[in-house]
Image (tube, rainbow, N blue to C red; front, top):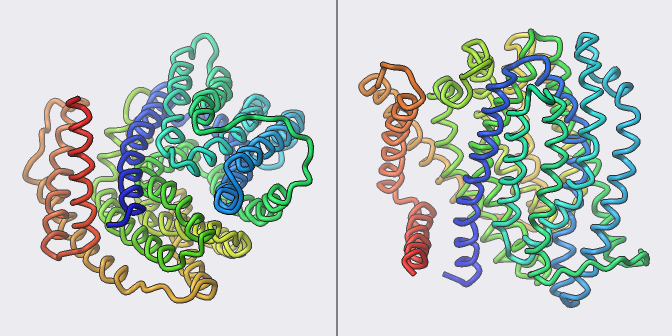
Length: 523
């Protein structure tokens, strides 16, 4: 096993652990908000108030981080670390200033924005939404700085800290929910701003340790800065267009019964925990390596790790989809159903959750493929792909919402994920030559069979083993743990018997990493 493979394996393992911890706190945040506000109009307003700054502009700011990483790695390979640090300073300064201008303008025009986008809201909900939006717009300043620092740390092989920034962020928001009597939903909006500030504050010491030195430099005649903006424009457009998915979903959901927007949001947050733990971890680690392989002209290494990433995602995402399809209601009930989040909220959320889960593999592979294009400094292809699939998604949403209500919106999102993967893969073949994907097809078929066996095992376990009374949090934990354990054991057993090379490789290296962790803990 090469040194690169060892580093990627170790980094991925620790990032997954850190992501699980961060996601659990994010999950706790959603549970607490659900307990205090349920699927009420107040939470609908807060979610809507974050759509423009938190989805639209956040996607744009994230695009700077996306293009920052390959350029930073190019400077490291072709120039030196000092020039790379100077490039980081300039990028950080420009993004913070741009975000500040947007935040001020957005805050001023919040009433007009809400009136234009959320026409389905009643008068009082509209008023609350624009009041909250005037607050939430300002967190994009810190969000922009956060993305650049994350890109810097990941490029310098510190993958854990950018994940752990979610801890202080979530703690602040959770604390604000308990101040409902004093500040109501406005306190939560302010907490989001403070939370994003804490993310920046948390990362700065680690960035300095990696050699980052902020120097104010107004000389923008830098070929790398020019390249950043040249590459970021297609990502800017692509991200903006892709953000229309959320806008269209929420816009159409605003005409559905009360709670539909909140149900979609709760299901989407749950998805972020379920598939994001693995897909985000793998893509975050592999992305800087792919960009470095490209800059160093190591084409075969590039292809090898891309296929390895796809196969790893197949082995993980297919069984996760099966688990959600079988246990969607129980999972939502366990996670959210308390306080104002009643059985109706569970019904609405679990329906969306189930249909979102059908796209898990598509979401994950699409993310890897998009980052693959960005690593070779091609931002036009993902942009064109994004525009096309969003158009398809809008049409699907309009059709499916009539038959499946808010669940149709989730299904449409899942379908277009696979359309996007097909188109991106076809374009990638033209760009870098044919990639050997026969192994991926074999892994998929075997994983599908193993997941089917796992689903049957869970269904049998549900019927045979169930702690029914009293219905408490503990009994829910016991039931889901037993059913999940039965399913996972059956999946691992079948995968092992089918002799899937990637699975055996992951298990062997996970054992080595765990052994090393135990050794460090013993010291």
